[in-house]
Amino acid sequence: MRPASLRLSLLVALFATACSPRAKESSKPAESVPAKASASAAAPVRPATNLKIAPNDLLFGKAPQDKIISAKLATALDTYIAGNLAECERILRAIIAEFPREAPPHVALARFLYVQKKFPETESELLTAAKLKPAAYIYVDLGTLYAEALDRAVEAVDYFNKAALLDPRHAGTHYALGQLYTRLDQPDAALPELAKAAELSPHIAAPFIVRARAYLQLKKPNEALKECDEALRREPGNRIAFEIMADIYNATGEDKAAREYYEKAVYATPPDAGAWTKLGMFHQSRGQWADADAAYAKALDLRADSSLVLNNRAALSLATGADLPRAISWARDAVRLKPGNADFLDTLGELLHRQGEHAAARTQLEAALAVVPDYPSAKFHLAQTLQALGQSPAAADQLRAALASKAAFPERAAAEKLLTQLSSPGVPSAR
Image 1: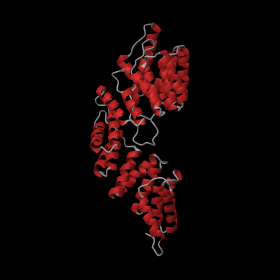
Image 2 (image 1 turned 180 degrees about the horizontal axis):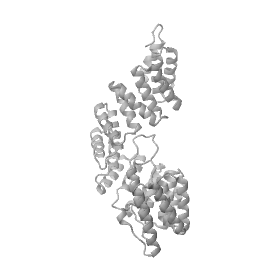
Image 3 (image 1 turned 180 degrees about the vertical axis):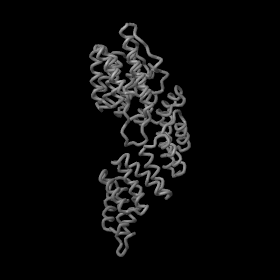
Image 4 (image 1 turned 30 degrees about the vertical axis):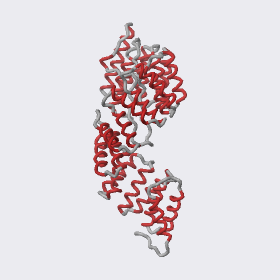
């Protein structure tokens, strides 16, 4: 779920759109949102929107009925801003009861329900609106719902294409299609849609950001950098462009440029935990422990419940040996927040082993292997723990299993050395 402030700004845009039943639709596509630092994390829910309009930009239709609906929707928006969600929903449903044949109230309710993650009800309201009055913005909302919330990509493409047929010059439609094709790893299909979006809304950075990602899928980093430059020409402080450029330089070993752009990303406005997380991961991968810890501390200031940052900050103590009790506390919090994450369980298990709490370490490491059986690093750490518990034969079994894995793991040489040690006659178990 997104931060409440961002969800609020999106809903402002959503109600504003629905308050303009006779107004021409904006061609502005929604800005993309930085991905989470964890590759395994689920993508955040994106409220369906193809417009960004502030409350004072409300456009009213000319018909008296349009003005009545607009005023009532504006009241619903005011109650949402005030934090009264139940009253907001009651007002929206009352508008629908009064004007059952008008599409905009159904769209407004659908967008409200979307933010509440009530996706089946969202779908029902949008389908009703589409039957009452087919419109490109409604089809874009349906496409977004199917693409982002319901994982029904075929239907999403169908509705985005319907929107494009109704309004070929709706930039948000082409942007949404390009974004979806990029998510489906179809960059060749994405690029022309994003080019059309950029042509129709030449001052918007978002299409260039997604084009950069599409070029990365095509393994064309230089083209991706050019797209980021175009995005920055339109929005000089665009954090996502900075992060993509930093990632490219990081992957090509250009550390100075990578650090420069990661640091630009963290100082972009508004502050973002994900950007600080990436900077921390960059420093951690270079063995710059103090800089990594400082970046993770900033990330936690912005988002205290980031399981990834808690885990990574805890893992720093495995390298430095510093403050194991505090590191174990962070690792426990990470596991509490994401109990089925094998990496987090492995981190906690290894820290407990280092602390001498071998029985507790064994529990965590076995839990990690229950989630990901072919996890050679966890098997190596479990072998160390079993050796410390005086169970050398079981430790040797874990080492053989780890070494038999085709997966690469950084402890392979250490595992071979420990297995040789355990296989030597008369070698006592470590305590």
